[in-house]
Image (cartoon, rainbow, N blue to C red; front, side):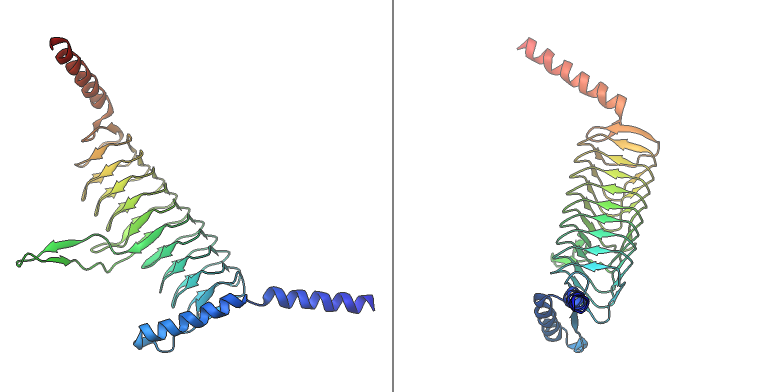
Length: 281
């Protein structure tokens, strides 16, 4: 009798674990209705609950059985989720997005028009693959949007901080190289190419079409002008601004950025000059 009771209890527990949460079913039905109403060309769009985590996914998505899609997360049509990936609650994985093996995605992340490599970490609130800031003024003085039709490509072993934004490309893909680490609140514009093993500290801003080599380090609040190229093994001090190409490895700082020793001399001379003016008064 005791053996029968144990088998019955184990079977009931297994069924309970495999059963998706009730809220997942309601969210799936809601998304299916919304997709059908919003996209007439995709009237067959259907979202179903995912048994491992409670999120929902489109029937046309490819999700590895070992992946976890947490409650409130949504995986759209054509997306590919690799082995042992974790997708946090509130995250949206857009159509045709691919996420490599063992990548961990935090809460409320938005992935669109992008691919993410293996063993990456994407922290809460990051947005990858949205349109870049590209506009022009036509002959009539109207502001028109430039097409933003390419992708953002994230390499392997990349870490992206909370609320960081990486725009998709317009004339070339935006690329983040392998093993690059990006802090919180960083803005990376469209068409930017960043090499491997770079470190980018918080609140840095990299304007569109800039190119960074390998092993580049940007201090906090560093700004890189559009279309500027930074050589490999360059380090920029915090609050620096790179307005032109930096072709030689080394340390740079200032506004605009110059070799660090020159920047220090400028700072000392400015301080001495200000003291002379104070004495004369």
